[in-house]
Image (cartoon, rainbow, N blue to C red; front, side, top):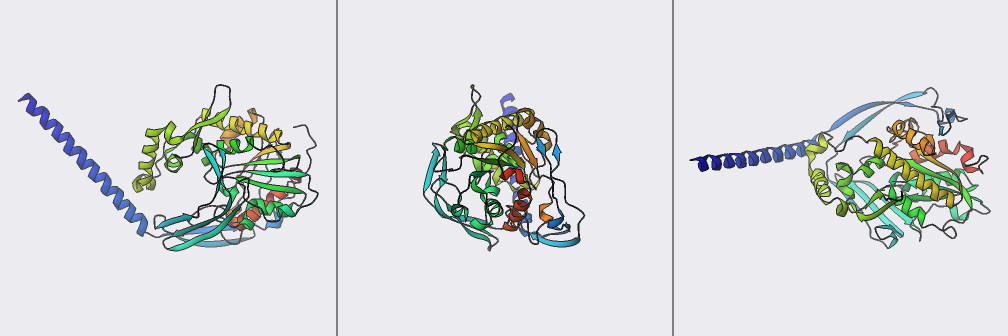
Length: 393
């Protein structure tokens, strides 16, 4: 009799578990159907600023930070209407190409890469990425500069690389065009795990990769980079084959395994998360907020980037807080200052109001060529970035 009761309890538990699983699957399926077929009509009023009236000087904040003043009063209002179907048939394709090994776990494409994104049968972008023999994106016109003594190195993720746009639409292209006295190098990495930039800088010996003996290095911050270090579910869901970086006993930040090998169970959970429309619809992610040790790790990584930049001849190194993706900057700034890192804060720059078209590629969210041109114009106002440093660094 006692054994029969136990069997009934196990059977009830099994039936209940199956029922709960069926309910979750149905809820996920209904959420997916809803997201595919709904239309979101968002009416957004944009205050448009006159670019020439934005700023003519910089304002220093404390010892480390530079915060350019915000733009002046807007001169017109524009209403934009958006129709968005976020789950409708996203298709991304990319041509294969030869790859250059930076480390055993990190490689860069060289040659021409053809990338195409379609959403709901509509082509969003169909572009070519031209890569040089060092794995950097080629910047049209930079090789034609003569008698240039300074470099400008851009470090960052796919926004700096120029995802979804042509070679002559990247931020590096417009900075090179606006500043003929420096040679610009694009070290942006698509799908960047922050430690990869450090690995890349470590192998640069100077000429012929970088011919100039002094210059400026800019590291472009985005909040999700710290989330990638934290291995949140959302970030780990696509990056499990990327290197896993940690701080060694001697303080060096290194990678010895891929994320999927260092955190196999978490990687499987992240893949399951990526398949769930229900979890994504409600914005579930874990861990949600960075802790003090996450900011400290990021500051240590950036300090090691600065060390490598100085080795290459940089007399100026700045973290640049980008518009659109820098809400966490006020939490990381104290850690940067403690590490002696200078920064430039463009986090409040209303970039989407400074272009006639879109600041971000629809259905993709990377910056458009027009947005890069406007951002480059703002950075170019900081003339000290393109001149020899007058202060000890």
